[in-house]
Image 1 (cartoon, rainbow, N blue to C red):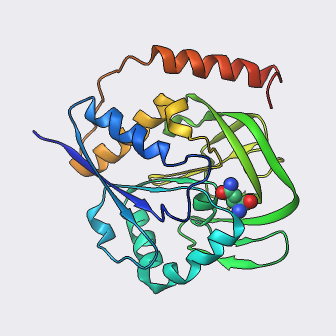
Image 2: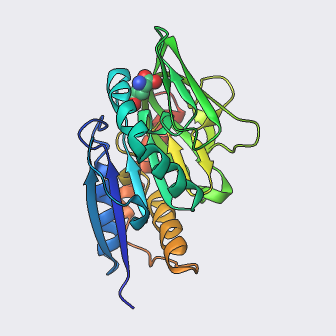
Length: 250
Ligand code: GLN
């Protein structure tokens, strides 16, 4: 059977900090190396399309101003379509500003409140001190359980609603708020994280877990991807993890 994933890259012209689009390149490459087709469409401000026809959505990070620019477009109907896709079990990878967008609101450190989607029960409030640096976290079992290395730079402190699971537990660094050791969110098939850099090329196990999640949702059964030769990726991952944990880089 010919298999295919259709990826929708939301707001690529506005939300793309620190090479976040590298996540798309990584997902496409890891699918195609296994003989699975991958179509990527960009969905820009003002553009309309049937979001229900996509399997996987990617939203990158952006600064406060860029997040404010999106609000009108979200209100024009795209926001409601995103919420329906989440409830329908579609897979989402959302980074930093794009992650904050999935919650109820983001209040900037100077008091501007962006009412966001409320697709997932959490909210974010900006603080005066930015949380910047390389960091590491342990994924929850439902997200594959591997260790992730990443880079964060945010002023927003995210607090998850009481019934909502984080994506992982902080090993070193700040994560959601620098206090409760939670990092990101995992709700249905939404993976939200503060990790720029981009996250997936540095953490191939997480990339495959996300791809398998989207394939299972699409084809209605568990699909295990055949292993790729990730020796170099894992050497880089392990060496960075070691340096982060020893405090040699921050
Ligand atoms: N503007 C948000 C914050 O500073 C998100 C920043 C980002 O995407 N890196 O919290």
